[in-house]
Length: 194
Length: 90
Image (cartoon, rainbow over all chains, first blue to last red):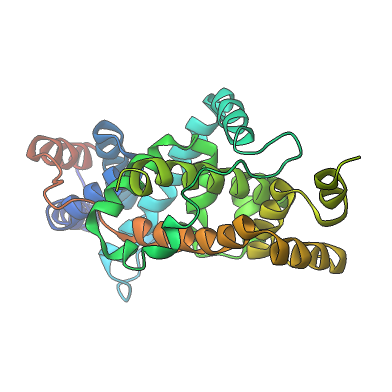
């Protein structure tokens, strides 16, 4: 098929971006999804979307920023799809968080309550980030979506709720359960192990 | 009715209190919620610590999201070629 010069240059520019930004986008996607195949597919989708919506690219923003924005939307879509398929995992995780409390709904002590406050350099430790990886993997997809969307979208809470198609009551309840699970996971894999 | 049950009725259970702590991070609490949470956290060491832990987790999340992952996670060259081919076909 013959292509007009503008078309040719558009394809050439985006192909150049694959070389220039492919690794960065892949690394980002792999880190957020924990799955190489998924990350490769998402990156491919990003570049195909970039060709399709090339007119939406404004020269004044950097290509990297623009591509990352597309990628983040793809990541959210990916989570949204897997969240629909994994509702049963929500129930399991919910039941698990219930076991942290006694019959009155008060904490069952675990002896690790103080460990947190002693660790002031926690976030500077690269090994801690690895443990975060494990704990994020453990969250049911819908919960993971709820906790990360705040940082990915950089939007107001109400907008995030719309984005996730959940009510605001549901949003903070999911946040709560996700935090409980993260807390427990960090205690087992970090504070308990150290 | 035992003491734990009475206190829980008046000043929330730990489950309810920690849920309100999370609510507070995204929405304003009602006056009644604020008062009950205030008293609960004053009395309950573990929930007071939870508030601190929750903030630490927030920071950890933000850091985790913004880190690019381990260096050396490169897009395999074959995939790069495949994508470039697909772009040409498009």
